[in-house]
Image (cartoon, rainbow, N blue to C red; front, side, top):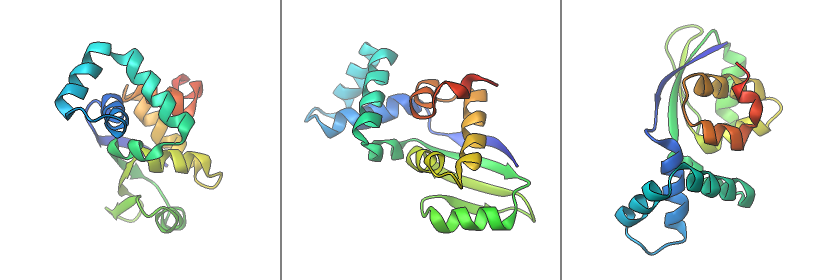
Length: 147
């Protein structure tokens, strides 16, 4: 199976950090965004770490992505689609699929022994494209930087 990134939310780590800050703040979104820009990626990492430690995975849903998955069999894809309701799959032909998901679903796939290989393919593609390196490191560990 091969995965290619088609689209991902712009600035996913800042988006997750914004969602995390908004949960605990009465500030308007523009103030939160200005604060996050001023404090920079070190602060974003702090907020992402807190979300992962607190299991506040709902904020991860704001980072979405679409992948082209090639050479995936019906049994594997069908099982995943039934098990993960927020994993959207559209068949393109006999073995190729367009798959949309959010980062929370990706984390859940990663934790499932039966779906981890599928998740690893996605994480490797995100990492290879330089998409969300802070999040990848926090959620999936250093191994994402191996390739």
